[in-house]
Length: 321
Image 1 (spheres, rainbow, N blue to C red):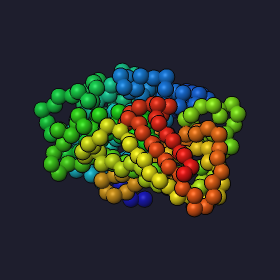
Image 2: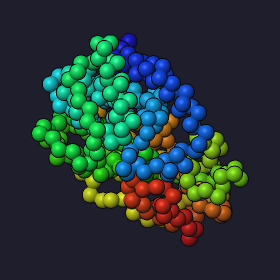
Image 3: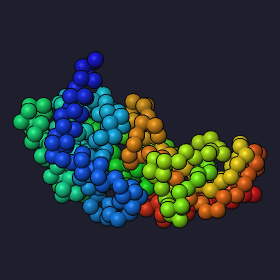
Image 4: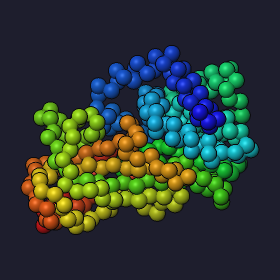
């Protein structure tokens, strides 16, 4: 095992053990009986961010978290200034601190802010991190600092850039980033596949679903088609406006559209749809009654929504030509 892997795994394990001892992992498992779309729709994410169990859910999504920790490890050097927006458990800020950075972390949710501080205190007592790390309860979209950052961490991500206010947050933080500074993550690519899904009757009337919660394998009639490409360093639009004629490459029925997103890191590595179980996992939109298509047929696909909006509000249309 390399030194990098040893540091990453030690930090990850310590934070996870703390959350388990606090009973948070057990609470998370019990909360998952409510569909993710319902949990998110019932919150005012714009004003309060995500909650404690969402922070823990991000943590236990291990492969994704390890990839982000590795990105922070790779990009951070001693003496750097790092800003993080949306702390969650604070684990990415802790990694930056371990690499010798002065860290300023912002969290809008009081309960999440309290959790991050508890974990910070625990790690300082165990001499895993230093106290050169400052957590501030504030909306990262409205911060005022006297410093410029070498790295900005803003990992407020959801598939397709729904729900989360990543674009607003990063836009507000960019004036604090040095010219040669880095964003972690630095971009997102969203794609769709036209599909047929045998939806269970109990959920068929709903428009938006997380694929893993349906537990039914889609039948795809297209390969992945990119509909949105974002660089967080300078987003010039407020949402998605996609309209294109698509040629089908398989015979079958269409009743849904699957959306997936790849998250880009400064090194060029990508957290893709198979590297995660939460926040940028595959989602599907139910289009209504299925219609049959043949290979070579064309359909018109239209996707329109604002970044950070509820997926139920998106306009998604697939019409046979």
